[in-house]
Image 1 (cartoon, rainbow, N blue to C red):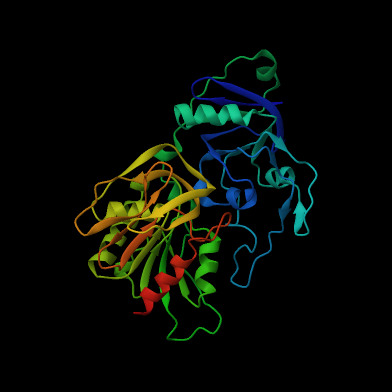
Image 2 (cartoon, rainbow, N blue to C red):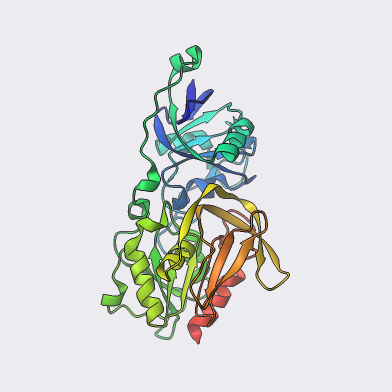
Amino acid sequence: MASLTLQDGTVFEGESFGAAVDSDGEVVFNTGMAGYTESLTDPSYRGQILVFTYPLIGNYGVPSAERNEWGFAKNFESESIHVRGVVVAQVSEAYSHQAAVSSLGNWLEHHKIPGITGVDTRALTKKLREHGVMLGRIAQSDSAAVSGKRLAVSIEDPNAQNLVAEVSCKEVKTYEPAGADEDTPTVAAFDCGMKNNIFRSFLKRGVRVHRLPWNFDLAASDLPYDAVFVSNGPGDPKQCKATIEQMRKAIGKGITTFGICLGNQLLALAIGGDTYKLKYGHRGVNQPCLEEGTQRCIITSQNHGFAVAEKLPKGWKPWFRNANDQTIEGIRYESGKFFAVQFHPEATPGPEDANYLFDEFVTMMRK
């Protein structure tokens, strides 16, 4: 048996799967029907206990951990699982898929991540929507499940920590696309918890990628590059002061700059804007976004708990808005050289409606 206890004392009981360990974190929910392996390996979920609203999880298993020719995971969004726990209504012990090599439970156990199944995830999600995301703890506790006693919960908020420093690379690494030469367009990419499909998206477009630690002093280096990119990542964007300062310097020099997810929030902070925490965030693969000034609506993959505030400096405009709650989903400067989006154009999981943004960025790099 196992239990999930929220910070307000509410207890959800179920059966343990994965690793039989206790864990705590911020409890959030994801509405996607598929893509659990990509979500669990997304560094943006660092510090969080992830609730899947889709009722059956694990039915297509888990693929192999093989690496591609550049040395990073071929099938996952990073080399490890970043969530602190998994909550599902029903986990599938049996799986069927031609690429699968493991069950979800065995995979979680291998990475020492606890899971709890048999939970009323509908009731849990409704609670989080009504009251906002909460801290919580998964505990392996037969006595708690039997007695119904509330567990004492004292958990440090992961958003008060610099989670980006935990998931960022520790040294510079360069990935060369096929046929690279001295004229190959090159991006200096700040890894704040970058998903692997962002690397894949650049490399298949013939772009060389310098993967940089979140606090790398690009301004003081002699690294050659044509543009700056800032990735997705976990936690409160205001913890990333070093990255914000590097973005501010790049913009001051007129260097083309593009950000995704956390990168959107960091860009807003770099130009003097602000960010705030959403009540329960946007996590799923069917978020509609409207492009300002057009009739275009794209369906996007999202995973964030913070958003950009409405007030932007002169010359900056909202670029996209969430069609559900009207929050800003992208910003750009009037010159077109600096821009960012809150959603994930690289998808994995999710639709590829916004994939064209990589092409637009590469075009800007070549100018």
